[in-house]
Image (cartoon, rainbow, N blue to C red; front, side, top):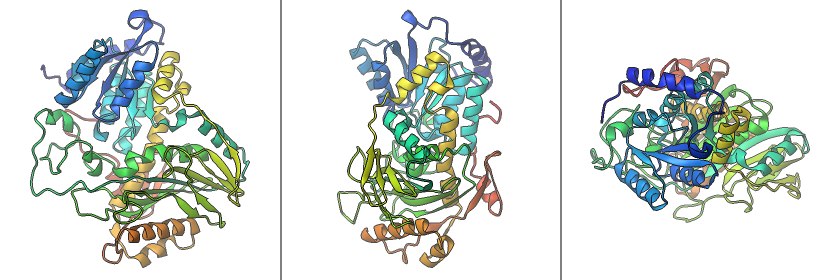
Length: 493
């Protein structure tokens, strides 16, 4: 395979970027088909592939994955469906193909930004999986690349595809239940131990490890599984708040009409219940100080109690004495968003509104076009407004996840008394921490023996997307990463 330097790649793609940035008026393939490529499809990328197969006027024409076994299986499946697809292990080679119109990427997090920036420079529209970035710096570069090269870039934070959710949020924003008091997001999803190794592990022979690592350090593999468990180490993943949090935190931002970033963030958490090679917290609360109401986001990876097969269902007594709960309606009752207002609350997971006595007052239906269908609609119209999650919204919602993680990462192990002192006077925060403590106790975790990490309150300059105040030096060091050449997200796109 011919080696392509960053300089040569840029020379080759700039012309294509200019040509393809023209309005969507020229014929693209036979019968004006949109020709799609999917990058990274061991997991959720399969969803992108299947979605494109169902959309009229879209053809899957290329697949890319650094794991040859996965790539071969994908190619075999396409042959069985009479699809003519080209296969690549190197995204740079794929992007040289000027006939490809759109790129979907569901790679590990550390590749999301670079695939997007390079694809924009090559004149291609992009649908990027959650979280859209590995850090805040990368997210902003993605926005800049989309605007500079006039590309449609959609973040696959797919809850906005549901029409009923639009109706429910409109109901809240019209003040039907009074002012918003607090917005709570939560993800209670079982995550078992990833195990512990006593030395470097063998990388699967089918994997081009140089390409798999890309922007990340190419270090010996120090976990049992290369795939998926990358979520739980900082070099490649963003923990559970970055894995599922973008979905719920995007809805939290949406319902509040939050245009920028929260002015402050603080996080409490830890990796409890097992000793393994994971670095990210499996139990975490992130508190966001923003207007017109605060956001509280909770992560739980342990079951409802030790050795149980079930997960907790969200239940909380609000500051006004309202018993808010997720209920059992909807596809995922232990993952979602609950919005407390003055005169009731709305469970946005099941799209049901309740009054302050817990009586149902309104139920919202809802069909879903689907994120890839929304993306293709925007590609055809060339209207950013047709992309339900334009990359700007995707960046800002993902940035909330990064903010919470940064507070956690520079925090210190703290006692129960120290934590309560910090959040005293805030009934909603105390409620969240009390339930956090009870949940861990039910799993046999003694917080006196294994105390949580208490992150500091970090102040954010939303315009500059940098931290200010007492902890700014430590916090700003985590806004971006050190890149491994030639896999570098540029300062200027």
